[in-house]
Image 1 (cartoon, rainbow, N blue to C red):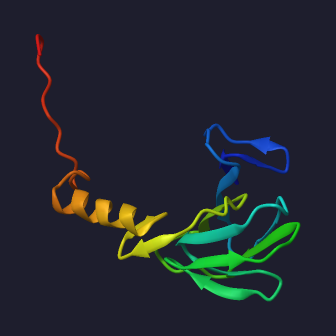
Image 2 (tube, rainbow, N blue to C red):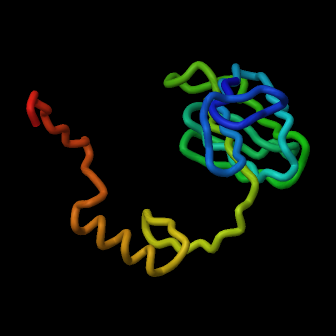
Length: 145
């Protein structure tokens, strides 16, 4: 388990954030179970990067590309399936959560903002090419520029 940002069970990650969060990258061996102490004031999500497993006391199945939303509790429970597929040796997950900030949410397509006006601005920025490109276009830098 690697704490990327925030704090989990007294372990602090190197990342800095503007709001109280915790972000963890967990690698769980086949058949193993992770019981992770969690701040009760935080919400909690787990995104499966690779592999198969189960989450919660109910052991609900999760697979690569899926996200689980946890309810309130002192611990998060995650188990790796006994056998993983040929693409991975273990269950790989991002576990994240934070103190709810109670901001309004407006979303449409890939954009999530706080207001409809911000959504419109995001679409306009996208259509005008102001959000960048994939792959990123790199400009060459020369001396004297």
